Image (cartoon, helix red, strand yellow):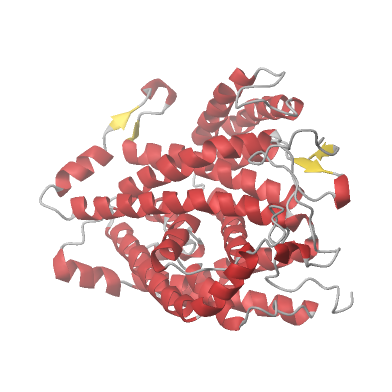
Length: 470
């Protein structure tokens, strides 16, 4: 491939994808604000004179004991509500690789490599810091490996930076791939006792769910279409229950269910753009529930750690587990994401988009060090509720996340003048056709014609192009 036709690293994607991702990020930003509020409330309550009431609320047990589901509210939040979060992440990941810009291997290589680097280096730093311990501390190696997109977007909203579309798209894709890798790590490394019969049984309702959603090619609503849509929720619940009983973390069920949902891919003009498939309908309906309810409630029940005053805070932040987490989130993410991006550039001979530079990659990598939701989940699985190491790890997550956010703020604010120029260019629409002009100046190979999506109904008289499902 000649340099003139090679897609640049962190290049601007198609207008269809940019518009869709912008809509997603607006909802995630609101969810991030709710997440921050829930975490702050939990911290204040847990360290107030009424901290015992917080723990009592978190430990209330509800659910049918006969099914082994008499779980605490905190466990329901971690196992149940986060399954909704991972269901949405699975839908987004499948959509990106089936119908989005990342269906092209050249475009998918960077976020995948960056996600792998952003998980491997933090884990390595954590292990190096805790090698001398023999109390199970190494079980927390995966804690600093996750990126919290909602928290990161909340930080962007606070600092008011005009982050270009290419960087926002990369951040979202990186976080989604990160989430998938995290759920694989949870399934493989944090399953202590496996019940093979329950695991095999969980694939039965999962398969039925998959058959039903594959038949429902175009849904007029959440429960619309020709198939028995009202069966989908009970089938999902049975799949989740059996997965929970198998010993595999129940959130894995959310990803597996998402992967069965079809994504419609337009075949017109090179196959770019997605039509209103069932995956888009599910994502449109469930993402607000995930961002606005599931993740903030989980954060509320997980972020509340009683620090124990200045002496307790000092003890926590000097524990090697907390130190390893902070180093992983701040230094590990920065080195892992930036290093993987450099390696992709080095071995593919692709260059950064001319409008961007390596300081932008560093700022984005630091932003990737904001690890909260999945990091808290892994902490609970690694150390169990109530142990001193568990509390120290949570303090490390909070400290590392805040430090990464502050450093990212400094770097990105220093670049904001450049970002503002790019942002204004990406919004200019001189011919008033609804598509910013910058997307129409791209080469034929890189340009995508604007097409309707589930958020952009077809104009009267214009027929949708033929489509295929994935």
